[in-house]
Image (cartoon, rainbow, N blue to C red; front, top):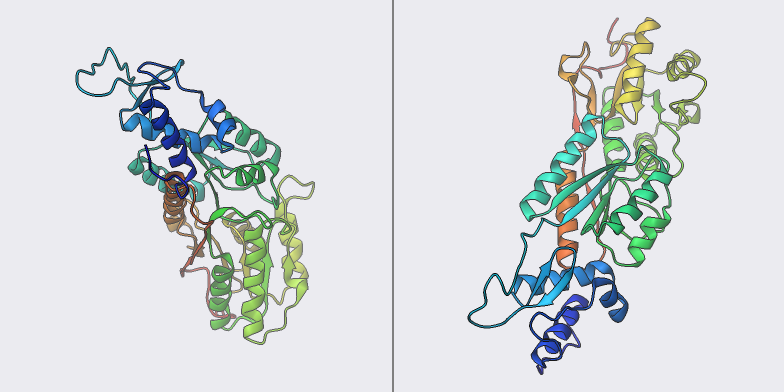
Length: 374
């Protein structure tokens, strides 16, 4: 074979090498090929690159696999039979999706989007719950590599700014997409909502209604790019309307599992700053707590206090006050993350992509003009 391989991709070079070995009779029909691990070391490439080359050779009928034994040279030409080439049914290659939680509507919509796109592309989905633990996330990533998954989509845990296993995958060119946020300093593919723009649009809506004293409620900001960007969007909206940024109105360390209940923290915050006429919360969990606490304090939503937050919650249409919220279009984000991953798996030499999609403001009953209750 005289074809110049200088400009071929890595997996095509491996294919070219093995085909040449077969054509030169260095490998004969039914000879066993080197293992994926051996080829990985021989060519100094990632495991996924070798898997891609071998899968292509199987599809071309040049080699065949025997489950649990290895890959062998097929008999070429006429007269080839199933006995000569015992190719077992091939399972759809699996992709792992790592999520910090799986018990809310937001992630259910993400899962639906990811699965629908992967299924259409011929991949199966392995769903992994990291329980919002960096340690478990790192362990699950290692386990998925050992299971030879074709690729991974990782929704990082809260507060995560660095992950050594994600860095390791990136350096080894493993097909990976980070979803919902990005990790600063790690040049990996990511698909995210434009959190800055979403927060800015939400606060602009409050300002357009006449609000000037707008609170910001958040869990711990440091290390979570999505929350950091939402705070920046909140402040940008205020600055563009020449509204002074009062840092007292930022409550940014509300955490679950602490000694003082979240409701008490929010109650203290609202009591300390009675001049607030609107609240921007970073998620529906905090938003719903605001509604409950305000009701207990005799503060009416939205007449006395307008409220807006990111993401909807299940059965919100039937809530006493249907909330105004910023939709991240989760189903679409899931599809786009899976679409990008499939593209990377099938074309591993492409440039790293960071894709940001605009959220959508859904205006309902929890926002109105300040003092509208009379």
